[in-house]
Image 1 (tube, rainbow, N blue to C red):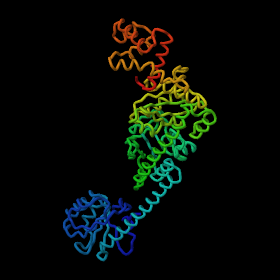
Image 2: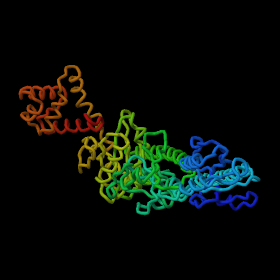
Image 3: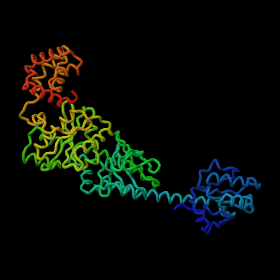
Image 4: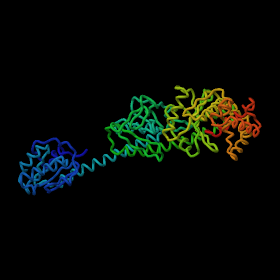
Length: 531
């Protein structure tokens, strides 16, 4: 505890005596004992000092009053006036001016050296400093232990909130990873444990929260704030933002409600949070890769029956549940962000998996029995993608049980994503998805056989046969509608259709051939979204 003027007055060997009526700063901590004989010491004071002087240059009432005003402006806690050198007693003008400005004046007798007062103040400051260091080191150990004991970020931030004596909120992008606010949604212990380790490829945001961690749901109660957090309003006026560097562009911020007691612990907590978030990101990436290997085998049809059920259970997918698949497909350059990003709160219970392909990569999110409907989950995932800077459609599959159901849902989601909207719900009983889901049907070979001649001819002659065929099939075989849509003469459309029939062997005017060509185009769109 820092020494005060009141404390100094009680030290018998000093024989100090309080003069005047000013007592407002008697209990203020003395930050330093400053000895000066300057007429104006203000430029050399920083506030909180006990100013010690013998007044050898304060020979007039005007200089004495000016001296008091200068140290008052500097924020000094009081004046220690040494008698027996320049003055036999403390000048009355100085005491009167000190009373006017509320500056305590202490008489220091001739036999009390200023250094004795300075040593007491310095010893007190040193003791107080070491006490703070010991307290800070103890707090460091508590925070580190909260992580090492498996409590995760939730336990760490609960401890931090108690140390700084305020509420804390941790945000990433527009999602709340943690909040100590009592009104926020509380994470259960089971969810917290999964998020701490995320060994099953869970799509949970990497809070690693232990008991007491909390997280706001996207879209709760109005959201928006200076911090951009859905569900919890944080702003610079009432909250203090601390940017958490993670080496990623993930906009992670620790918010502390004002006022709070820091003492240096916040900087240490920030570094621990950064390390833990990076660890969680790496665990997320590895877990999703593992789950992707299992789902890849299921999609290919190489896992069935009890083997499929056992492998799915190993990555926390319940094969007996009616699972839906949400699918996001991105180019290889964006996949590192996609494969390790945190998912929105609505998908806390979901399992995420990474599938790596030759020309693009997919993130699959498997959710059982979504309480708010599949479309709501798709919208939440789409918002999170936008937050991390990814512009990609979300495809949604239907809800089916068992491994074959997952395959069916996957191909529905893949076909839906090809429609290009932000969120694409499945079209049930899709013939294309049914055929794609069957490993026994060589759809890719069929599509290549039918369309490769057209692609080669277009590349060589710029004939646009593929686009003409696509328009013809989409417009239900109407030559007039195709001519209008493509700004062509009807005879040009008929000529192109004749060329298509000659090159492929399939006549678009014949129903059976038309179905064959439609399926080939559908398979091509699924293989290369956007075409």
